[in-house]
Image 1 (cartoon, rainbow, N blue to C red):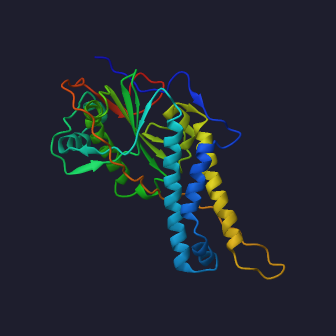
Image 2 (cartoon, rainbow, N blue to C red):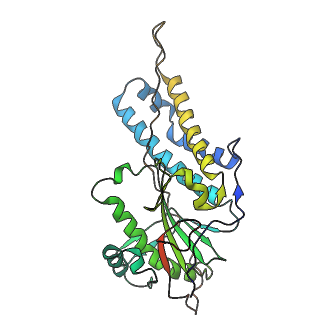
Length: 295
């Protein structure tokens, strides 16, 4: 059985860089409406500490939610792949133990029966599937990984993703019109990352083009976040109390890393179970473009 790498299509679709696409502009507008409540904003601008705290949390959540929606919308412009959201992948004990005790290459030909009993689940933000290449990527979108720096939280997240990857091929075959997958990559998008390196399985927005196979996607995502922050800054300044004559206007420092609010999980109709089973051998690893295999 061949080992197949999930890679972006040779002919990438592109996103215009001169103007924010209408679909992304609509997402920014919606995020601003949810995050910027005029009365609360006036209270925060007037110095109400409780209001300031609420505004900060709301902005953090909405920017993360916006980033996730932007990535999903951009991925759907690539007609060569299926974009699945709202999935619930069981984290089976046997798969979790294998992921915890071993490196990826030690079990990269494993798939696990999803019918086995599990007590926990993993909800990926999106799953990309390229049918001709029999490959998939499980993607988790984070506004910032700053909160994952202690206690091994990041490593635990990656191990959960690896364990979930073991059951993904069976679930795609069973519940999604017999989608056959032989290679599963995992990737975490960190909206605050500045490094272009991906050896640790973490992707910056600047590498979004390579991850989802859409040229200009990284630039478009950055523009959407910039538009969201710019709108908030303008409304904050407009909400500030009148200042004494001659006193310079107050400037709000742009918050660098708002926290994400996970996408609401939408129930998915189960597909017709198949009498046939997909191939048992599955390659799992960190997704890397233009390579011979996942690692």
